[in-house]
Image (cartoon, rainbow over all chains, first blue to last red; front, side, top):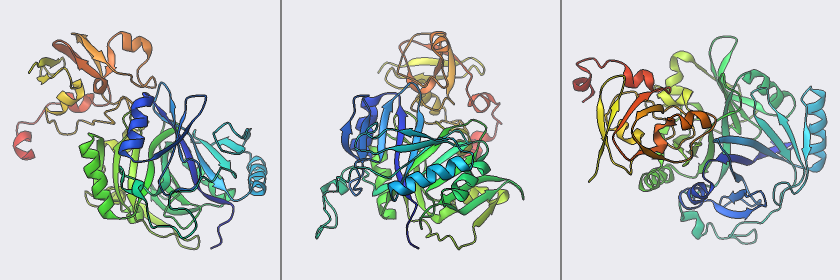
Length: 308
Length: 112
């Protein structure tokens, strides 16, 4: 499959209650690299492997949660086309000027029926990684500092009207459905959507409150590294939600845990390859426990209730 | 080591809580099955309590779940509150149903 159009999740801006505490956590425990601070006081991070300037932005706020989740597209022409396509589909957009986020070009922002702000952008400064792109080493010292994920992988968002968000992603942005949990023949509890060959680039769970974050996920390379992440969480008294375990959906291995101000994050490894010609995998409510937590085969209290 | 005693109004149960641990951390040690401890970071709101008596220090908590008025009136998130005296509290968040439901007599034996 040629990768065109929407390429991948590019950044997420998270709200935190205590910026200094969270900067310490995202830097030292999660092992992201700080790449900048702006005049609004926001702090920017990327993983050791990522090449673009940032993938995580922290903003001090009076509640936890997500400000926006953004996807990088392949060109300015694609950005303009998708903006026009969204408008034609009845989705209002607005342009955020270049430079409003450090080292980032113009962004096209729109609000989903689920209450989440999504952005598209084509330009972000490539600062590279420590291995470089000429005869690179396989990894670098920062690959072993903290949990040290490879990349920002996906986000799971909670809100109402998830089928309307699904329609926008599928009909306008070129995503496809990979897996879903069906409430009945007409309605899904949860959907996993991909714009690539990843098991998911974004996912939604039906929930009465709009605009909620269930988790932002970071990719690790091996199950061993997931176990190492669990050790680091315990050493640093990180609040673990569940894991290490495996999801039935995507069959990825996982830990759900919370940042110091209540935003859930995931350290994720594996997961199916997905292709747009494949039939979506369906899960039914009588097996929802195994779909979400494959070993326990039941949901914990927090899965459907604790969001930020 | 100094401990304060925390009494849960609805059930009359009490637990010991050190000044450097949150009211939620102490409550978790009660070991009740199904206490839906959320994020433990002041962000999700499930551990909301009302402090009826006693003094405490607190850390910043989400305005999405605790308004300034509520916070001033002692309605706070247990994960962000540290006792400086004995405390009496009422559980008002999403965890109330689990903390306050009667424990079947065999529950502790069955949990082993």
